[in-house]
Length: 471
Image (cartoon, helix red, strand yellow):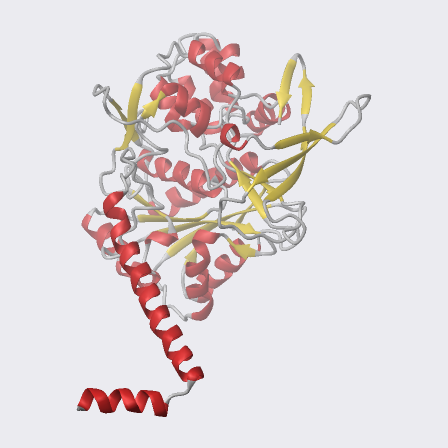
């Protein structure tokens, strides 16, 4: 009787439209329930891809352990924090961190993304602590991506940093507005918090000679530090950050050069069209990438980051100059077991892969590399020359500017010119800066082209002395 009554009510109480609405709602519920079930169970049936084990500072972040607690337990007196967009500030910070060891001290090198910013004020709990900030300015006077949260904390919080000694080195470019704005702000803000500046603000100019700017600042910085803290230089020889591990298991998976969302050049096969005429001695390329299979949105003026690879001919030449086994399977492992950056680049890989994809072998060689190379040079004249080029006095800076910067001499050029210099290949891989992505403004419009994006780039080739320079 109850069932009959219910059916009678449905026939009389609901019209056709009501039934349609109820039916649609029921089918919708069933559909989304099915989608949810599929999403939870899909991974059970898809074969997973096994990748080599690689731990970088970007993917291994542990904010549970306070960096202040770590500094206390490990008796570290120096905290070096870097805000880096392209890797240059990180590299300079790393070089200063190695300098600290030469004075018998220990430094903590920290990416601000790895710390709980609320712990920053606690650094005054460490007696005679020295804080060094390497801060790059990005865009229109903005902090770098990895320093955004740290910057906001400094901007919106009143801290007490009494008892903290500090110094700041900034990285910027005078051709842009807001030159070194972030470094200037941190320098001013630290003093407002009661910290004591021990050395003047360093203003590195990437449009000029950033390496010389840093060399001059570092020289004066260490004079100030030794005067204030009484530290003495300790002759401890070569300071290594990584140790070499040879991979003997031939079944181990290797990194072969990571690619971004759009895939490799070989996979893409993009449109690559010359815009200049045949008679022109210049080259400007229109390059299109397909994005039809990638969930990606962009606006005109956005940037596309492209990971370059080094010239295979130069890679092989570098291997010959170092007498390196280019097929050697290896890993570089951080000697500091507590450091979140376990490897300088994806490991394990081969020497050839590392020189092709991960380190910059074409940039003008840095002064710290020249100084390190002198230790592995048997000819005394060559050794003295390398030491002069790495010295931050007027003669050394002048020689470095003329011979290295203006002539754009790379590690390959140096090894050619100093034939008795035979450093270990793993040490060279540790010393050379990481190969960084190149950023290009997108020149297409997503409103016009939905399945592709384009960049327009100038190809630069020029000759210095008898050497062809590309890029």
